[in-house]
Amino acid sequence: MFSDFKMAILEHRFFELGLTLFFLIFFLTVRAIVRKIIALHTKKFDLDLSRKKYANKFFNFVWSLLFLVVLGIIWDVSVRGLSIYFASFFTVAGVALFATWSMLSNITASVILFFNFPFKIGSKITIMDKDDSVTGTVQDITFFSIQVLTAEGHLVSYPNNMAIQKAIKQINESNEIT
Image (cartoon, rainbow, N blue to C red; front, side, top):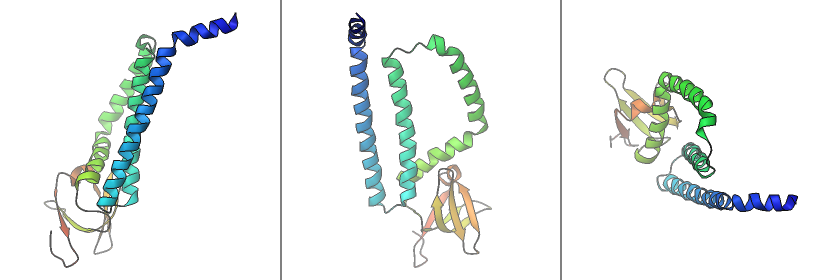
């Protein structure tokens, strides 16, 4: 009798199990394709491996969040029972995001810098800012900032969200601006 009960539950949830397996395979495939695109982009433009790692982390987070939402829809997770938790979470998240909006814009800007900007680690650049222009060699590009080593030996952290808003001149080895 107990095995009949197990079979009834399994038959009842067969559609959800099959759909879950399908979307798991789908998301893993899409994740592998995105990782391959990032690897090809890194190799094509001779980018630093840490930038590849940052981009992979960002897209892994996005895919995981999307997968959890899809699982919630497939398994018909009741929002009514979770509404207090959701309300609390979104209240805290809203305050945190409002207070740290620049952190999110810096992370988004780092992804844009990864795919669309011509400079890389080791490039000599000038970030054109009215009173605070920065000239030096790019040491690192993180989620939040570009680290530029100036000729005086100072390490300047320039926020990514500001870097995509300013003109950036790349200086090649013969001191010509490109």
